[in-house]
Image: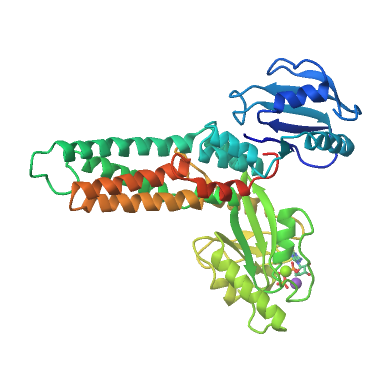
Length: 443
Ligand SMILES: Nc1nc2c(ncn2[C@@H]2O[C@H](COP(=O)(O)OP(=O)(O)OP(=O)(O)O)[C@@H](O)[C@H]2O)c(=O)[nH]1
Ligand SMILES: [K+]
Ligand SMILES: [Mg+2]
């Protein structure tokens, strides 16, 4: 029999309200035992005294709610205990629940996993629950809500339906053809597969925006020692994240801060100043990491010291490309400024006074919007989706050139399975542990 599970659904620690969720066949009986009175009506909040069923000790005056299967988040009988969020209250209720036979603490993501297993959510929707909980910016929240609403799952299910119909067509041909079958995929099915291939390819060629929106755009600050990179990071983060000093070669490790630029999540990295003659092997390693981060960043902020003009650090100049924003720092003390650097018009800033920071933030926000904004069509959000779509596309490519209709049919079946794995319609047992492991307990 299915175990009844329970967990604190809200963040641990002191809080105004803490919610403990119970799901499974013993939920209602457990509520009755804790309240020692008739069950409240489903979906109607009731204020009750909760007592430890064994000792009779009062645990809390709590607001309780119950849901009956299948009309609940998990699809099972569910009870929610809205407690006063004191540590002793929560600990007392958890202990009372743990003492009941048949009840156990939920594993990470187990509530959502049960919702999936009971058909309340497809896998993309379950993943979106995790994304919504992790969402830190407006754009992330929007994407997660849309996926949770089923937009991505519907797209893949729609594609799968088309493949099922194409398959039926081919199978009918195989069954009913007199003696000489035309070779390969039937003429009527070919355009269907070609159109679908086009749509999948377009969906995949989105520059990874859905995945990046989950993870954040990576921006690296690069430049010569003492150009003011760390000062700039601190100014953009509005806190003292990195050490600033007049000594060249201060920063060695990569220092990361998270920013919200116009609703887009950004991971901004400060790096060691680039120079030939590093003071020691530690700085040398720092410079290696700086170059590595610059190469992997989505966007580079190339910082030059405006007081050193007309000299422009050649190592920094060499890193500037189309994905770079050129910054001239220390404009509070600099006198001359060039109209452009490496073909780009620089943003003049002073990390010290804050002058020009708004301009720089606007440039970076524009980059973020360009790389992360998702259009009206839903975007894939995980490498898992991409891998399955690649597999689907390869199978459809094979189907188009298959020498026999039977082989084309088999490839279409494989393509359809690949799509079905994304939403969890087919053989995903092995995937579930991996997907739900990323959840926290209580979700
Ligand atoms: N006047 C002026 N000084 C600045 C400005 N930004 C940084 N500085 C000074 O420049 C020096 C170097 O600043 P950092 O932020 O440590 O420079 P960095 O590029 O991180 O240096 P490394 O980590 O050594 O590569 C410090 O003395 C800062 O106070 C600015 O906008 N105006
Ligand atoms: K420095
Ligand atoms: Mg620094």
